[in-house]
Amino acid sequence: MPKVSVIVPVFNMEKFIGECLDSVLQQTLDDIEVIIINDGSKDNSLNIIREYQKRDNRIIVIDKENAGVGAARNDGIKTATGEYIAFMDPDDMYASKDVLLHCYEVAERENVSIVGGRTVFLYEDGTRKEEFEKQVGNIRLRAKGLTEYKNYQYDYGYVCYIYRRSLIIDNQIFFPLYSRFQDPPFFVKVMIIAERFYALDEPVYLYRQLPGAGKLTAKKTLDFLQGIIDNLQISKANNLAQLHYISAERLNREGSYMALHNLESLDARKILYRFIKATALIDVEWLKNEELLPSEFLLPEVFDYTLSTTIKYEKLRKNTILRWLLGILSRVSNWRKK
Image (tube, rainbow, N blue to C red):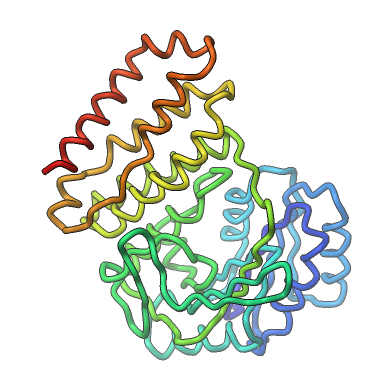
């Protein structure tokens, strides 16, 4: 049994997949398997992967029709045989050759199911910026050593950790099939089940910042909003107020921005419904009692934009969806005045 299975989903990444695989295959922890899922790439990615496979028998290749990154990672999870699982995006790299070794050794020594470290952002000009703490709105988070997830409650950064495979398989934790924001619900669920993790005091993952990456389509907006809904519900069910606040802030910032850019799409009605549903799930009284005050919601901008756009939204102006929206706005406004 390999010590770690590294799962790499690939879609049209011929420019970076070589660097990514070099980073994985050169790890000093030699006893690994690398599961590469070619998710219907149209470029030269598969040929590059096949060449690497010829040179290294630790590589397993799954070639499939495009079904999205969540489904690809799930295929990797089901194929993996390692004691632990790691996830790597095809344009990223490990921060050093010893990352997997350090994570594995600490996981075994400390008897924890999840071990990871810090992110380093890699920019197009080659500069790097290490992230020493997480900041969302009014919250700053920094984990070091053995950490209870209830004292951390962050939602991003799943690629910076290795996970005991049995933890994932026994609890049937898989990625939702969203085109965006599919990893935070997975990460939050696995952290809640594990209850604690170990944070190394070192950088482990190079996250490449690509300009213009990720077009803000209506589908991605809908999927993002559904992921936020997932985390709002999970946080409430598990009494994780900081996670609830973080999810509300993500809805406020990214969610509002994405919604505003898709209110002229054919899916505008669906986007509004889902945005309202997510907003209605925010427990503002709970956040107030926990002294977690969300910043000014951008929801009124979405509302105003909808009302002021072309005649095709005339039906929406008379629809119950807008009455719901007004009710939510009133509730938020009254809460902020208290």
